[in-house]
Amino acid sequence: MLWIDILLLLISGYAAYELVEFARGRGRLKFLGLTIAAIIFAFMQVTVIIGHLVEMSAVATVVTFIIEWSHLISLAFTLSALAVFIRESKPVFAQFPLAYTALPLSIILSYFFVYDSLVLKKWLFFLYQGGALVVSAMMYGIYTYRSKKYILILAGIALFWLCFLLYWGIPALRITSLAWIWKLLLGGGMVTTLLGYKYAHSY
View 1 (spheres, rainbow, N blue to C red):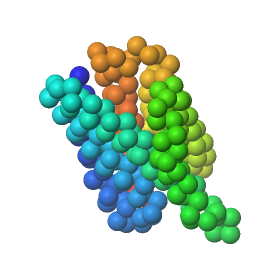
View 2: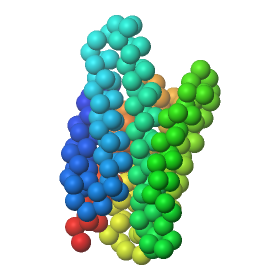
View 3: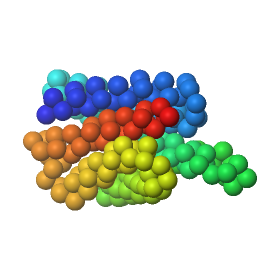
């Protein structure tokens, strides 16, 4: 449905704008990965909308290619950003080397090894998404336990979890007529998490 993809474009564009502001302020490196991920996601949504408007097989092929790789790259940068968040949450003496936070980007290269296998590609996306959600839920669960100012971020992660479970658990929701359900949850998770960051960093 075109309307939900336009909505996701607006949400991701807004998220990219706000995250750029975060990246310019304190925790610049911490929000850089999320900023890049949001920009790539917004670009992906532009191509999705183009695919809706231009119904040609050649365009559909290009759009599918862009969606697949944009999804992968934005996910890699999200995982890298989470690694930075984890590193900076530790005392200085316990922090792992900064270079390690770039390791999640290696999944982009590893993807070439499974590119011809649809099953393996789906499993990789499932594992990467699930891993990001597990790490973020654990991290912000602890943060929220210590300070209630992170509660909105945790609520956003809960929406991402619901989206994840519906998308992978109910294949029927992936078809066009029902895709708006998980996409709406995805957009809601993005907005809620972003508002959570603004609220938490307003202190």
